[in-house]
Image 1 (tube, rainbow, N blue to C red):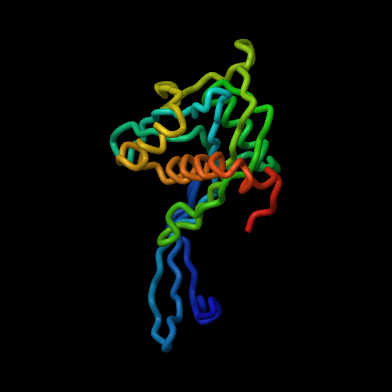
Image 2 (spheres, rainbow, N blue to C red; image 1 turned 180 degrees about the vertical axis):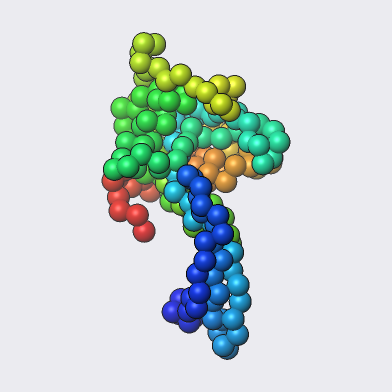
Length: 198
């Protein structure tokens, strides 16, 4: 079925904020009926699977208010700096959240986190050849990030945590599974970090 069968008849903004906006569209359905569809337009994000020379991944445990608890996640963040390229955003988030630099960055996977109600897209990178950010150049964390815990897990143990339901953040799940698959196929699925968005 063609996407063009779904004609937008009206479009109105319900909420506008710095990170996302909420809209309601009236959309013509196949057969001619009209339905309202509410959705979120999001600025987008990047995530990083940081894999060290010992085969361990760096995860953060961060409080998420909609859930009322902390969960395991990748170092990640919003695409909210004008003109910043996605690989640069990934490197920035890696440095800010876990005090690491990447000597090598590859593209792992692109994903829409919740396409039923949001257009949010996250691009997940694989960072290797890791080194520490010098102490005098480290980012001062605030808000929820001030209480983040940073841990390293063997990649296979992290995948087991995904399959056991201990890791539920969508980007983290996708990134860990993609990294394990890429490793098991000798890194052949990796794309260049500057590959165009689909």
